[in-house]
Amino acid sequence: MAIMPRFKPGQLVRHGHGALQLVGLVKKTMTALRRGAPAYVLVQWCGKHQQTEEYIPQDQLKLAEKV
Image (cartoon, rainbow, N blue to C red; front, top):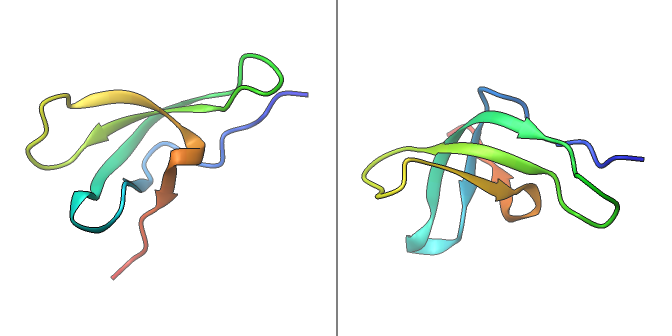
């Protein structure tokens, strides 16, 4: 049974904590390739960041709350 991603394209997510927190937009999701592997999420980072898009394991991301 594959691990399904818990995020959907178009959602805002955050990575990190405190002053080092990044916010990004989910562009694409991928199911886990094998048992025990995490599902990956393609995130486009907001603001000034060297790498604008990257794949991040979903367990390192949290949904950004509305303020």
